[in-house]
Length: 210
Image 1 (cartoon, rainbow, N blue to C red):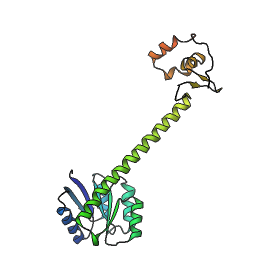
Image 2 (cartoon, rainbow, N blue to C red):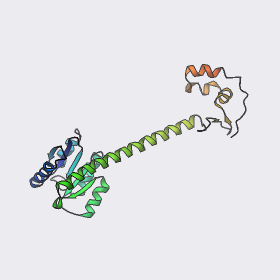
Image 3 (cartoon, rainbow, N blue to C red):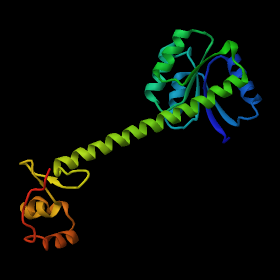
Image 4 (cartoon, rainbow, N blue to C red):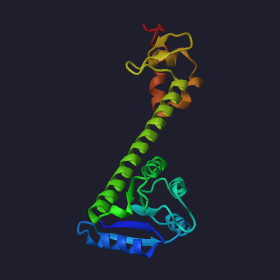
């Protein structure tokens, strides 16, 4: 496993020491831990540095409760956030996940193995969600391109025949012969334009069967 960069946002010295000791006990995990005690300091770091995971305490000197999660996720949605809290509150845990946290752990029953599984899970889950989001963005872009092409020349996806404004289907050569060159030259490269010009007059314009 590659060395992980983890940001710990925690203001209680005893809890900071606990997390550091647990991480040091995990032989399978090699990590660089960065500690900050306030949300302001965390936002400053996250603005110019990348972290594989963020361990976030809900109650900080400058931010309290579920709003702490909301502020981090809203500004840094790409972060893999694991919420750490002394309150084993199921409702708060559900809210944290809904806001975009990847996991929620209570400090009272935390163990090195539990912490390891949570960090790895958060990183992998965030990576999966990001890949899914990127795929959806690519799909949306592809659909926009298809829509743009359809507004230029409505073409059959199977046989490549072109539909004119009278709902008649033509082959590409027939379409180019039937309509003025000014309508299509901007969409055909010079080399192809020369070749297609030779077809003009060779085809009797007859609508293809739908």
